[in-house]
Image (cartoon, rainbow, N blue to C red):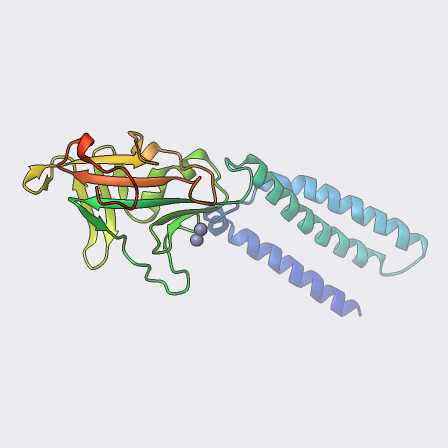
Length: 243
Ligand SMILES: [Zn+2]
Ligand SMILES: [Zn+2]
């Protein structure tokens, strides 16, 4: 009986160690471990084990020391995870996990350019866990947006291995790798320029544009990038139509 308790205790401690050892990995995904939360967690664990101590000590149950230890460890770990998750949610820009979408198209010299297809058949996406595309011309923002920067259009381009600025756009393309178009490059032998339209309106924020917080499109954003030699008036600004 005693051996089994010790075994569980050991398993718990090992798990606790592993979750801390992977702290850096966790940091990069949806949540981070905050060291100061150990203090309130231990206090809650201690209070729980004092309660158990009182009950079992009075009954003269000899296993009280072991019970108290187990209660301390289990309650402290559970409290830590609960407080940590709540803290991360409350302090994040998105105030908790989200799943937002925005549709986009990239038109270069009159041609619709597709992002590179996902190579990983298991995840079927390009980009990070928090900002990616599933071969659907759609920006997916998923999980915790820890800070405002995480929900910016520029962050999406960075996470898929491209970049966006007011005068250039760069994306990974099938078979050709990374392709970049810079203002001044030619379309139909004329100098071309990059335009961005959000819901058919000209927008000059480019990488610093904050993607709207909606799961469905619309009301989520429809973003159209047009690299063209045409003048602004000549461009069809609607998503889905050739510019
Ligand atoms: Zn997704
Ligand atoms: Zn999605």
